[in-house]
Image (cartoon, rainbow, N blue to C red; front, side, top):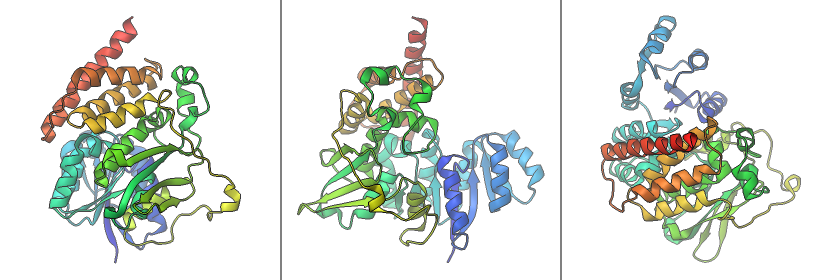
Length: 386
């Protein structure tokens, strides 16, 4: 039986790879909807290839332009369009592959409509993990992780009651073997030269500073209801062991695979089935030869330590940290600050605004997010002016 699926962020890295997976498994899915930002050239090709019923774009003008060419498709736009597309209960699953806070509200709307979620948007759980997981439980909705690390844990766990700890692996990024000074003064091109994964620019910079791994620890806490004290991070440069779990009896089970996002994407959208799909080559232990592991250098990668501390502190801390880091990353990508200043700016915002008080409403989360972004931009402007 075919699954009905919608992909939010279909023109991004995860979205395009998801469509490649679905093309290989075209007898298993009906694409109900697609959404994108402003990449109308690519969304046109996707419409021609996959024939969705509904498409959401960022601007009304783009929706009207596309409607003239594809008269049989329902085009919507903006936040209201995302609400519309995520309220369609004919969907069996929605892949949330948009980047940034824009993914939070549509995800909650889909959950409230009883639609299972394949989640590739970090902000959804970083900003509102407690709310999202509680809502999913109330509506009996599955949150299926797409990140390779969380997918690995999901595949390894049989019963959470017997798990002693989660072990999340990190490649170490492009600066693993560089000095702290070299890393802090790195160029944009150097920061984007990830040795193992091909990703969007923001997440690639986060991987360079290991902030990405801190966000994954917070996500793992929410996805698997695991205390932070039972989540470890280790560096594994080959990116073959995607993560592991240790059971109470000392047994360790790891999920291995070649570094390809096609595999976790496919597992999330086909779950609980396993099917043959895109596979560049078979896994070959002899060819891989060696798997290395080492401790994280928290002095060199302080953003990871900051993110984990924010997760442990809870309250407003993850929201503050996420907003400040994102604005700082954008400033780095615009050439306004150095890579090493991302941590300094983010830590300053957390120190100024942190409160242990819970942020219980989505409206409060977005208000705080805006306040932090405004403050962070003021720090960046002051830094440029000096």
